[in-house]
Amino acid sequence: MAVEIDQLLADWKNKVKIASQNLLELQELPTYQRLCGSPGFPGVHLTGITAARVTPALELVNKLFQYFDLLVQTVDQATKLRQQLPHFLPKEQKIGFLMVGEQKIDEIKKLLTGASIELPAVQTPLAQRGLLTGAQKVNAITPALLVEVMTDAFSVARDTLLAVEAAWTNLDLILTNAETQIRSLQQLAESLDRGSLNELVQVRETIASLRDRIEQDPLGVSENVEQQIQPLLTQVKVALEQKAKQQAQIRDKFAIAHDLLQQLEELNSKSIAAFAESQEKVVDHSMLATPLTQVQIDALSQWLTRLETKLAEGLVNPVMVGLENLTIKTREYIALEKQTHIANSAPLETRRELRGRLDALKAKALARGLIEDVILAELAEKAKQLLHTRPTPLDKAAELVSKYEKRLNSK
Image (cartoon, rainbow, N blue to C red):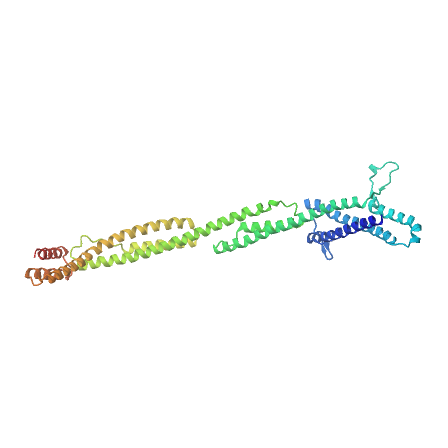
């Protein structure tokens, strides 16, 4: 019998030890400390759904410690009774002690298995009393049943506290991420010369309001609180990114416009030079094309300057249209000037080609021993004189070179 009592008592001591550890960890939860407060730091003033759920949970924690004290007292009382029973008795004392030992063992069993724990008295409302019903009702309960009650209460309190902790953590993370996005978007806005955006100010105010609500009622703040903030941030982000993309496009278009204008100016200079050289070195000017005038070039440059001024004034869309039209016009001028340059360079190319052709024919005549041919020599001299005279009559020079080639080939 004593062995069974010892095992039963050991089991309850182990249960008390485990319960003590779990209750201590529950009490040491940062969320519990935050809710209940500590010396010099008042607890959170809860409202709404959180108050409705947490207040009973905190009361449960208090009851848990009350119940735990009752359980500890019962186990301690049983332990003291067990200590009054010696483990070994002299043979002559066993008979006299047997009756006393059985009585002690019965008391221990009643403490550990019977309804030995009296719970705090419960006030009975008058509406529920009879004439002979007391104002207070005292309930007695077994340690095992008390542990069941404590287990259920512990689960409710634990789950409620962890739910508050998760809500605080999750919502704080959402707001922190939103604040990080705001800083990033504000930097982007400033880089785009947008200054402080009203939308971001509005989100900041919303976050400040939510922080107060989250502190007092984390369970009552909707879990989709992110939807109260993120759509506006996304809207601002999209608008700023479009603005940044648009500015990048404008910069690229301005760069292209400047590059095209530079190409046109360089091509115009070459065309003018070829036009002047052809007029100087060739008699026939009928195939020459007049290059663009400086007035036309300057008009494009002034157009580009006006667009840059409008961009500084914030007239983005008109500038985009203007740049497109300017680019089209500049490309048209470039295409036209290329043709002009080709036309003005053609007589000079023909003149150089005839010179080279004459030199090649003279070398061929020398190789064939015909360089002293009187007619060939006369043709060569006349052709050379025309090709090195300014201006050169290309038709006559070409005719002489052709005659030279024809006579050379006939020999």
